[in-house]
Length: 201
Image 1 (tube, rainbow, N blue to C red):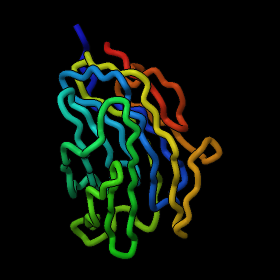
Image 2 (cartoon, one colour):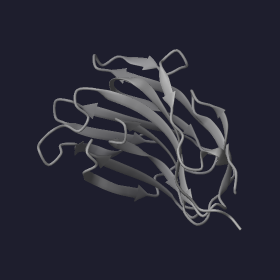
Image 3 (cartoon, rainbow, N blue to C red):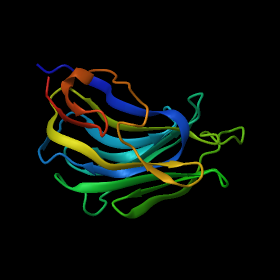
Image 4 (cartoon, rainbow, N blue to C red):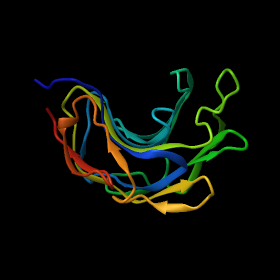
């Protein structure tokens, strides 16, 4: 019998809090067997503040976004379905940008601006990301232990600095891996770029 794996992640942070954007592509696993929950691949800005990417439930792909304040206050949590071109084996571009002037976040997935200038002000009127933040890439899952998939990988990773320039996110950029939950279920291929497959329990 499989053991449930709630809130499990492979996370890698660009350690320095000096970024306002992140972009790259996820090579979705060619073989996906998902049941009793979901798997996901996403980017984030801040520790657990702005997160957006792709999830798969076994029947459909979704493009969720989650925004919380540094104190854990939920600001938004929603998703869209049926974005064209998101299928097993596809390479899908993802981009998150923080507009520090207007205090918003915008998200592009597969070339489509699916989240346009969403406010990231908390109930006190503060920008939850401040002037700059850490960035992260994540492989996640929440299931009953039976899900598995072949190798998936982030590629073409770039980070946007506060002056607007983009730099390559490679192993020369200081990073911190922070796995959580049943992270041993993943077969890690590399941390930067994050690449792994998933075993069923």
